[in-house]
Picture 1 (tube, rainbow, N blue to C red):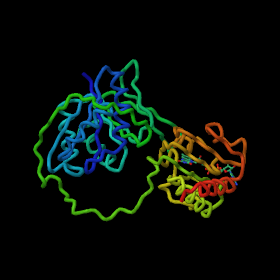
Picture 2: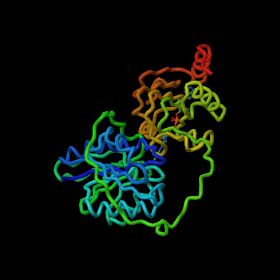
Picture 3: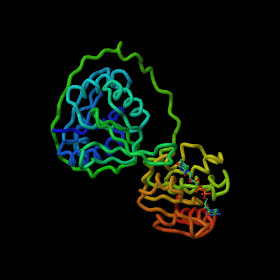
Picture 4: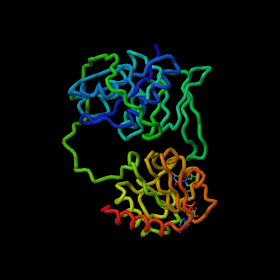
Length: 329
Ligand SMILES: Cc1cc2nc3c(=O)[nH]c(=O)nc-3n(C[C@H](O)[C@H](O)[C@H](O)COP(=O)(O)OP(=O)(O)OC[C@H]3O[C@@H](n4cnc5c(N)ncnc54)[C@H](O)[C@@H]3O)c2cc1C
């Protein structure tokens, strides 16, 4: 039976949500192949995670526990996954396009001598050939290219966080567990982790429930100070269009869109953003889009659930006042 493999990214027993998103799309692909979706769980002492992995849709879990795999290192992880893939020959292998996933996927694909499509935004099965259709922006985002890997297996792709939704959790479901063993040594790992430097608070746009985003229409750096205040009161994060980032008003990690981050918040507030296709590509799956723009013809209004034709600053300040009046701090 054909298998769609999903790499479970975990650190200190916390699973990265992109792994659940991949289980969701993996299940759909597996159904189109009359196959199964299988999760790959590597680490040490990771069995407590099995329940959660099955709850998010895995039919099967391959578990490989070893002290050398306690935390991520390129060589042993690539070695272990390559070993498993050669033994079980999955049809498809999906990995989250996180920093870890990008590092891992290239190594695995190289050792398996197969292709790898990075950063895909759409996945489906060709009904005639049963090949995986992997779509991603190409030529600087100017076209969408659909890539196939017809001659080699597995068909491999990395997928950006938030491109696919997290599937519904099914409590109490359990599937097949395959416990694997492998010989690994500290020496082969090549590197040792001595510790972590304290991490500065970084922007968590992908998983924010509320995003307050600004574009060129907000006129400058000072505009983002107001949006920051609004985001703080709403317990959200600040997003931006590429033009605002290119103008130097805010850093790149805030950029939403095709060449920035893909987001799916409950509420996306767009202030002074025209709604170019490259921006929409990163935020159109938000549950509720509220757009504020002086131009009634701005394309953002075509996808907005609520559109306000007006000056961004007036609306943002009025919202801040209303929230404070209601006791937000
Ligand atoms: C290959 C490629 C990749 C790209 N990737 C991205 C990407 O990842 N993300 C991205 O955002 N863009 C991306 N772009 C750029 C994109 O095409 C647009 O140029 C950009 O999104 C426009 O930014 P904007 O909406 O802030 O600016 P503009 O298009 O200039 O829009 C500003 C808006 O503000 C409104 N406005 C002006 N004054 C006010 C006011 N006082 N109050 C309210 N509204 C006001 C205007 O009516 C206008 O609609 C990419 C482009 C290319 C070619």
